[in-house]
Image (cartoon, rainbow, N blue to C red; front, side):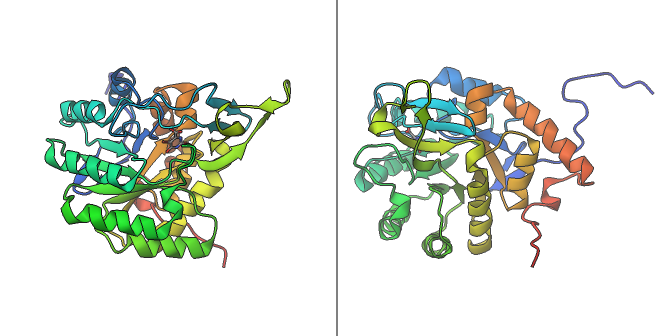
Amino acid sequence: MQFTHTHKENIMTTMTASIAGFTFDDILLNAAGVYCQTTEELDQILEAPGAGSLVTKSATPMERPGNPGVRYADMALGSINSMGLPNLSLDYYLEYAIAHQADKPLFLSIAGLSKDDNLQMLREIQASDFNGLVELNLSCPNVPGKPQTGYDFDTTRQILTEAFTFFKKPLGVKLPPYFDIAHFDMIAAVLNDFPLAFVNTINSIGNGLMVNPDTDTAMIAPKGGFGGLGGAIAKPTALANVRGLRQRLNPEIKIIGTGGVKDGRDVYDLILCGADLVSVGTTLHQEGPTVFNRLKHELETEMKVKAYDDVAQFRGQLQTLD
Ligand code: RRO
């Protein structure tokens, strides 16, 4: 028997996930901030083979230009950025998400510079026709004078307490990386008190610094060169945060794993540590939206080596040596 060749043909592997009653036909998406600032970029993610969803650039109530000067640089083990929350406003992304929500389940990201901004945006989303998922970014490291909310456990609890008095759509939070076991315990204790649909871990590793050896200058301009680290350098931190939170969070709270994905094995490792969906930042920036299909095929190859045909068979199944 002869098989005709189509470009979707030979994936017999199940790579799906569900969050808040939505089914994702593929488990990959962009990391917020990458390829998602304009409708032109968003369209490319929406249509990219291998991408199961998208998240829009973190929005503020009003459009922002972000930080001036060179604000993203590639480096040997990943990237450093201090974009400073450039975005085209909540209304812009809300309009896009409502127009395209019939195609796939979509994530709308918001990052207010104050609790009131966040609550105001959630009210607007609640009142709108948007019926997808909202990612509340508690971890932007790059706005001068604004600490990452996710490192302040009391403020995080306060925002979620007020949000859930009126917000009834599926809500998740984007978290900064944590570096101490006590902090995993503390953030999980807060998050487990709320009906969150998901957490997304990790945002970039905040406030690193890289030097350009040709010029002896910092690699990026804002904040004296301090910026968030992403890419390969972030992988062990991302794995630890996915794993540490999966061990602590209520099972109803799903996990989007973000950080350090360059190839299919990196996706596999995040799933093994407990990720439901996996998002791609630095490598998407470097390679463009064809990255999703490459990663999907590499993940399938890795799964075949291990004799799996469904990501559910190894999700969260990391073994330890003790
Ligand atoms: O825009 C940014 O500078 C930025 C944000 Br909001 C974020 O959440 N994470 C990041 O690495 N950069």
